[in-house]
Image (cartoon, rainbow, N blue to C red; front, side):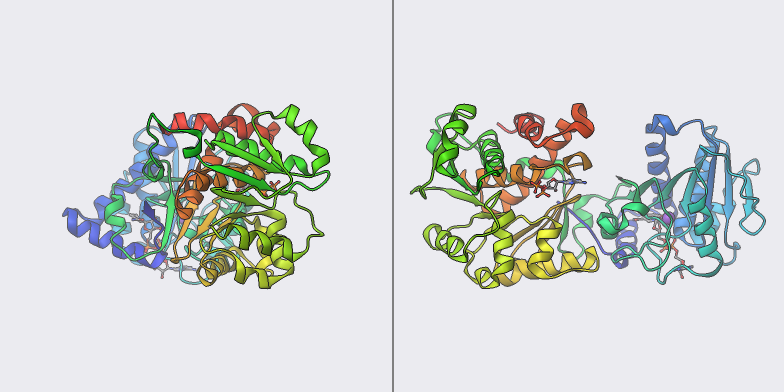
Length: 487
Ligand SMILES: NC(=O)C1=CN([C@@H]2O[C@H](COP(=O)(O)OP(=O)(O)OC[C@H]3O[C@@H](n4cnc5c(N)ncnc54)[C@H](O)[C@@H]3O)[C@@H](O)[C@H]2O)[C@@H](O)CC1
Ligand SMILES: Nc1ncnc2c1ncn2[C@@H]1O[C@H](COP(=O)(O)OP(=O)(O)O)[C@@H](O)[C@H]1O
Ligand SMILES: [K+]
């Protein structure tokens, strides 16, 4: 699993890699520039446009110079706008400046006329992870002007002005695309920065995951390649009992749909037996509509896992949750109104069975821990919650973050904005409950569940776009196993 390193570790990573491979830092910069250009060439709608590259004084600027040369060589019309004198620039920046062909147009930012045609590409290579204080003076002015023009803006590594690990102070480039090297910097995953980062891509510059992971860190990126190994193998002789007997609890009057979504998702994720615990008078209709689900108003015995909370209601007594904690004393999934109930009665937090999985969206999370000024604070509080109560906290949203009791945080890479629709979260509850019931360790169930849920959403989004609804995610769950080659 790939680590998300801190901005301050990236120089060390570069240096160690360069030494180990016996290459120069200039060669690594060339690798980065090539990876950027390869990415650009893959975007068919971004070809054949004039390119304006703003280069700063550090190595990010050096990347910009190398990108300028490469694009010029393959026939792009390139204008390079340099913001620093050569003497002021980093060594690799200077070396790349010397490699620029005479035929490439280079202007100083002081004399640039800002005539950038609509539809042109603006590449931001002003500052990268070396930012050490908020933008000010001339650089701030340039960034403000870049933000005013209507062009397609692409940030190299990180939009200028964004710190790598914390929240922006002041202004930063508002990019349409960010192409980050090797792994996304943490701050690129914050919802606070959506307007700066645009569409996030990361490109390989040849530093292997093993190498990257030699550095200290407890934040990881959850990617497709990580998932198959986290799955339990099932042999050909399994019985439905081996696939887990689970119950989804919630669904008060008028909100039974939430539990039905979760229950169907559990079945599609592989559960052998799924009970929906819903009010008695809703049973008949549900039974006809969803015959694979079993219905019960009782708390069924011998369950392997439960998921509690979707559509449960807001007038519950804390005893109702306490009772579940005592009766089932195993790790369980707690979502929606179960989380709201714990927010209302914090003493319940002390009673949660260890390794249970809480799946709050941002609002539910803040009800639980108090309001947070930004995502950096939210992530810290999520980790605190996980380690204090020895639970798993799945903070939902783009790049859902899974915080574990041992202090790690995993950021999911599947999912999309079309999943911001009623019931998507209920589907996730069903999927994670299903994996728990199948015998997955709680952390594995959370990681695998979150990944499959997002992947199902991505598959559904291909044909549904803005019309995607939660049931589409459920229908796409089987395809996720096929796509990941899970038997
Ligand atoms: N493994 C990697 O990730 C690689 C990174 N490379 C590039 O190198 C970049 C990092 O290079 P550097 O460490 O030189 O950092 P930058 O290119 O961000 O520049 C740092 C310079 O800017 C100055 N500075 C800091 N904050 C400022 C502010 N607010 N206003 C004005 N000046 C400011 C610093 O004093 C320093 O001189 C990465 O972002 C990436 O683009 C690539 O070249 C090679 C591989
Ligand atoms: N912009 C987005 N990008 C990726 N995933 C998203 C996005 N918006 C929502 N999701 C996912 O959809 C689900 C929504 O959950 P939630 O807000 O609890 O919905 P509901 O309460 O309607 O069931 C979460 O798993 C979340 O990660
Ligand atoms: K940049």
